[in-house]
Length: 158
Image (cartoon, rainbow, N blue to C red; front, side):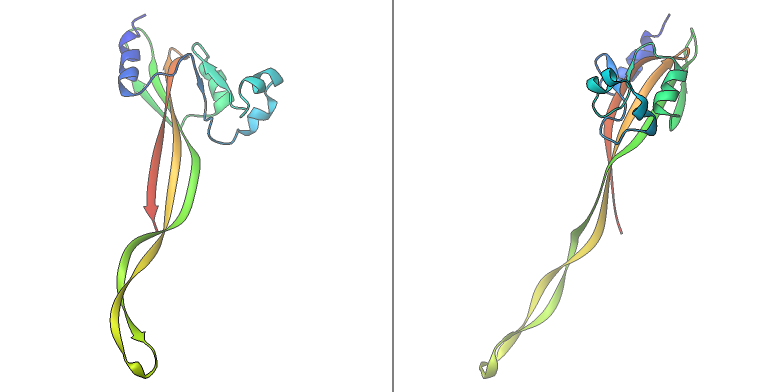
């Protein structure tokens, strides 16, 4: 089979995981993880399945679920696709100082007089930071060839 060019394409876009892909290790286990055998949980305490090269597509769907995106790829000798899973690993909500405003303030006590001064006061907005674990699985003729994982971070303010 001529899948070397497909593998090279995946390798050029991100780092190759050695031997297996531990699906979504930084997020909470799915409901189907409760049925894992004790020896599998010992190897992967989070309860996520460990996917190995050669795992059939049906098994991956059963263990991990339906991919968020399926990207077809051109291949001469069979059917190739990249399955992409994007899972929220962490959500942080915090108040962040985004600007400052000058506010007039009076200083001084009693009869000694005082002065008006400008004071810089921070203005806060709610910031949301979402960290996603993105797993990409290269499937060829219905079987897993290799997988990669990366982290994506998104931020927005209210």
